[in-house]
Image (cartoon, rainbow, N blue to C red):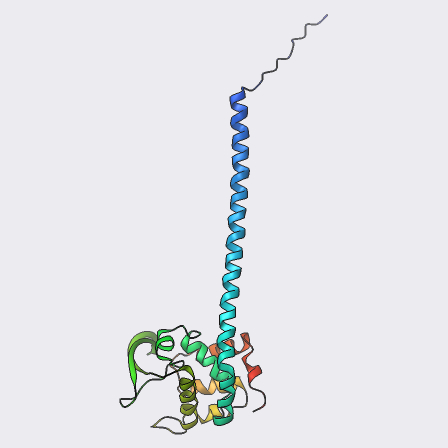
Length: 209
């Protein structure tokens, strides 16, 4: 009869088993904590995004009625007024707009109340930081009215400078007319305005010209 060697079974020491269970439990705990942190961060990001959107909508809704009034008085499309205010003032958060109510980056003449601030302008094919003197207003609505007057009356050296903007019947034509008329030095100024108007559907405030 052949000899059969009996198999041997070796039991793991209790300390090793405990260590394995501890490692597995620790891994599960770390994964759960990571997922929890990720969920909290996502919720916070969503909440912050929602709050930011609400602030932007409040900015639009606060200015839109007066932008429509100015359209009746001076012919400037409300979508253009709103988009320029958003772009130039960064939703009313720039120092120029928050401290001095200048929503449109309008510069001051020597006889007008003004404040010197640095700004970025497109000069000779590149962005440069320059110091300029900007108009100071009593409130945002005074800034909006002065902006409409500027577009309607033009500049002291060219009273017809922005007449193509006033004559435009749609926001895309008006935005391009602003750029070709020399309102801003940014070579992408018109496309930025158009993108803002489309993203926030500002043309709904225009009605029929």
